[in-house]
Image (cartoon, rainbow, N blue to C red; front, side, top):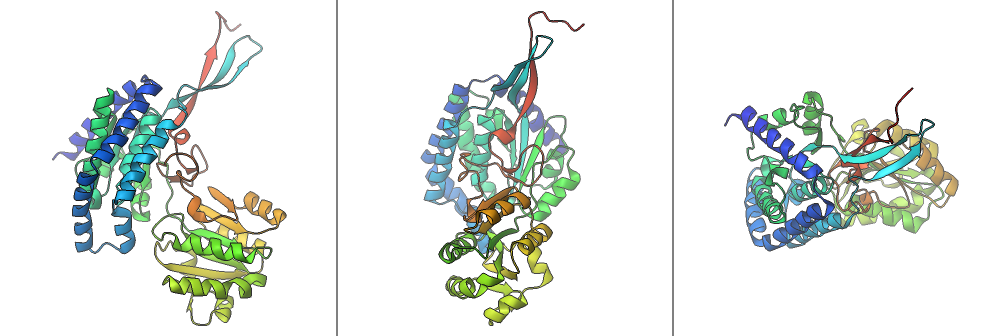
Length: 418
């Protein structure tokens, strides 16, 4: 296959489809989403059969348990995919919304209109549900999508692509509005991120290696985060029961996600109260603990944390723990080691809570809540296309609004400038 020619063809077709989507009605796009959700449910057996091929290949190739967990399509996962799409269909349509329309001294009215970005390229690994989530968010926001999933999920992604195409055709929208790249050749990624003539933004979802490569090679703007080194800080004014519950959930609810806690910070005055109890709970779950000297003085049998541990995204049942003097040292640690994804403080002190919210500069900052809430579904976005730790355009979970832009509109009545 001539990869360059193939990808160029996809780009041209997506660009044409994006024009059709931009002029489509809210009703047409919602109907397409509902048809896609129906198709996914009706194709559950086929989806699981194709997914089983990917899981078997993954096991044979030595994929980790965390990666296999991301790859699996269960009955519940398929139902969740369909429900996520229906939730997106039910969300208000941002496209065409006019805001801030104001009269100027000249008599003209100036405001903003929300518009699609155009063509969005999404590059992701492992999780086949991203195919459905990304397609739905792009369609709802009036964007065409070129999706390139990982080779480990090739069968699953193509099976989901069939349901998307069937739904689009039933709703009377162009099938080219969502295209899943069929080749697993890595050269396709290189071509996609350089197609600035046809692609308006790239959204990568995957490991640090993939995202670093895309950042280096892309000629198209990228919405991205490199990794998720997330922190929970148990403040000296924390409620012990809340602290133990949140710190346990943030680590063990699921290991292989970017919003899982990787480092626990504990105020020195709270360490004796919470660490022994947490240690019991973590041991039951098989979580390996790595601690600073002050942590190991309390939990004597755990491993020592190295300097590298504070910057590590484990995506596994491993947790680093540091005892800090108080909130200032906790914020300093987060500033030095966070990936700017998600951080949480456990405290009953409103002053400390407000300080944490103000001074911690991550894309999601929480008070008395598990970091595992940091995703589009839990934030009411219906689903997310990715997480952005950038400080411009989209930040945090990227839902519909993050896939749009605003343009100035001017309304006059024969006005001329003098």
